[in-house]
Length: 210
Image (cartoon, rainbow, N blue to C red; front, side, top):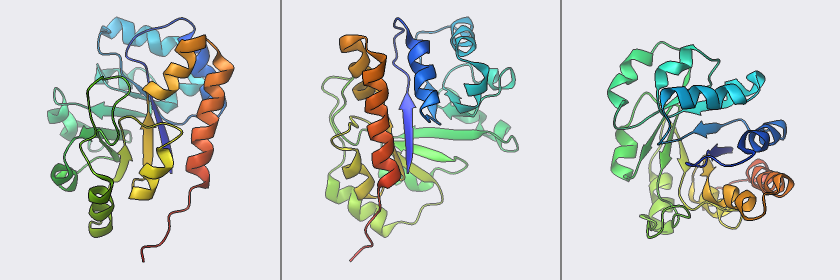
């Protein structure tokens, strides 16, 4: 089961020290999502991360930067989804987000897809879950997909196993993880939280349908 971390939309003190600590603990997928950043800002952000971890980064903006760094992947949004065909023959991870089960079936050409919001969002107040657990259970039971589906939205230590039990191939975490750091500015506490998430995913065994 995959555990994906999405960067905090805002910058904060010691962010790159914290990211380095997470990579050292086994983080394999970091989505660099900084909506307010310029191309120069994104480049600087990447360069502050040790080069040996660039291969674990997935960028959301200025996707042309993939050729300047040893980037793991590209996340396509509405503003650049039409460029997917240009990357068909390039050996790089490709991801996208959807909010629709119907669209989930039709999306092709991606290595994994975020489905959101699975739980009530932590970072977007009032952004409520769009799916009932039974609805998701039935969907994954009755549909065979070629692409991995990652749960996004409100994922925490307390509910990540619920997401995996519904049929997701992994989970993406943002607000719950960064809140552990921003509350106390304690890198060790955040790393410990990540390790719990990672262990839940690594040890999860999906029950065979009855």
